[in-house]
Each structure stands twice: as structure tokens, then as C-alpha cells.
Amino acid sequence: MTDHMLSISDLTAAEFLSLRLLARGIPDLKIPRTHRARLADLGLIRFQAGKLLVTPNGRMVARG
Image 1 (cartoon, rainbow, N blue to C red):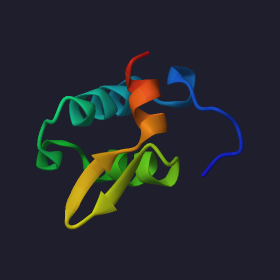
Image 2 (image 1 turned 90 degrees about the horizontal axis):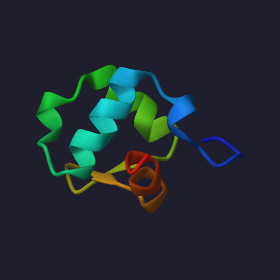
Image 3 (image 1 turned 90 degrees about the vertical axis):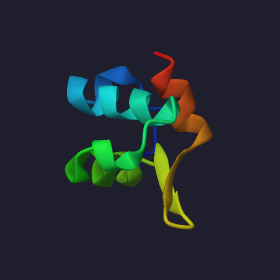
């Protein structure tokens, strides 16, 4: 996780798209494994009960 507020510029365009899709409720199977891992490492998503959930910070970044 990072110690500063994340923004769109911290993500690749593809990672940002994946975050936006997750925030809109698209099933996580459509999201590349590498994107899921990076977004989780950044604290933008988390795994809970076998699902990926977008964190509050993730929702803020997804809004752009």
C-alpha cells in the first residue's frame, strides 16, 4: 500500500479501466489477474468472501 492519496496517474490506463469496471459491478473474472493483484496492493480493492470489493479509496479513484 502507498502512503499518499492515489490518483489516476498512479495507474496504467488498463488498470484504471479494470478498477472502473469493478466499481460498476462487472464480474472480477473479466479483470486480468495482474490488474487484480496491483489494485489490491495499492489498497483500491480487497478480497472478501471470495469476491473482489472496491474500497472507498478505490471508488474515489474510479470516479476520476
